[in-house]
Length: 555
Image (cartoon, rainbow, N blue to C red; front, side, top):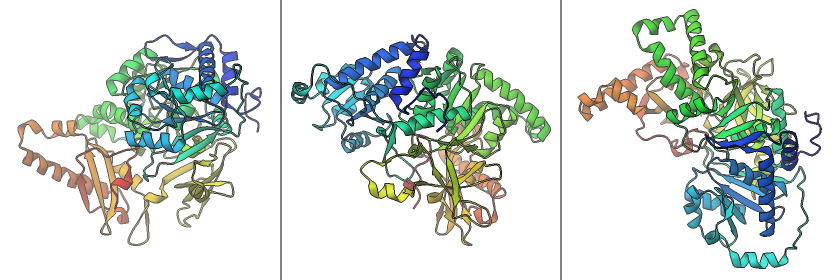
């Protein structure tokens, strides 16, 4: 395979790290907001220290080590330490429920865990003798009360004073990532060193990344998108990464933008959609005159260009790459980003592919509603095509395709057939090789006339309304209905809630729902028209990438 960086002889994480430490030794690499950064040299020293600690406590090649923490420089230290000598890292999303965390530790048979103080109570509730070593991620020290010292004493008697260093091969498992998808089944995705490193290397085909680039990390590192694009990619290129140790609310982000002035970011659509709906759109719809001017294409484009420059300034003034993945972007938001000349790229991938499969090339042609073209060495086909639309299931071959699901040969065999991965996503590829995603095959609703109805496409139209945060289209009694979750702070303002009784507000909301339903029905095909909108008072339960867990709501 002719990837760049030919001096990286084997596609392993330890080789990737060693190369960067040698090239960028004294440069900053990882830091928390407003804290002294860790250099590449100190990252290497910290990793060496942790490798020695893990091995001296009986962790050997192939052993599983869990990692439960919010983002921090030491998260990366733990990740590289475990994988450096062939052990297997098991990152756990910090917002998983306690029972899910315990299940993952138990199912993965983790022998050790790195855990931040914030999440230590979750581990204290866990009773499992297999977990013999606990390390506090905050300061990389052993947590005595959570460590099985009698077991370690026996292990240490068998360990030589000078332990021979083990080296992973590129086909060894590097990480097991447990998904919490919209279907409800959490599976342990086994990713090899080669899966992760080749995926990291392939980003050169879409964007040029420099040692001077600064990444602002806002997504959880335990998610494969952030881990690959927000950690491995910058380290490969000698860039630096800054972490926020708070929930990325608008006020927290605005402060971070002004301090960090990032050049690069990775995000899920929800963040940029919120910024557009809350900060930009109101300026164009706040008055009768502006609303009507904004409807004129030429004027709209000029206004969007001005807004785009202001948006770049909001991000600190230096942003040159904003990667969007994890879920589909609302078409109306993407139209704004394109007309605003905002430096965005929409990508497509899955946890099972480490994750990148397709993406636009920064600075080149971007087609609206497309996730771009395939990454290097990714073969992509559309199978079982609809003869009228050309849509079918997206299947792929890639060097980043997982080894399989941990302890689940049956499910692995169901999705990997003859070397091809069945993604479960539906879409089509145009004559220029651009991929367009229609939706998940499991989410498709079959209309009365046999039509394929993609709920995600209808929801994108519904969510254009300024007062709607989320919507969920479903079939009930052979009729299409939609559950809607409002932005209640905005609703209170729109309806002057403080001046009316609860009963009067309920009537107003019912009327608003009907008005939105009638309007949306004018924008969809006849077989996609909805008969009823229902208010969803509580927020929808979502996956870590902010997709609604449909199985909880759809009968």
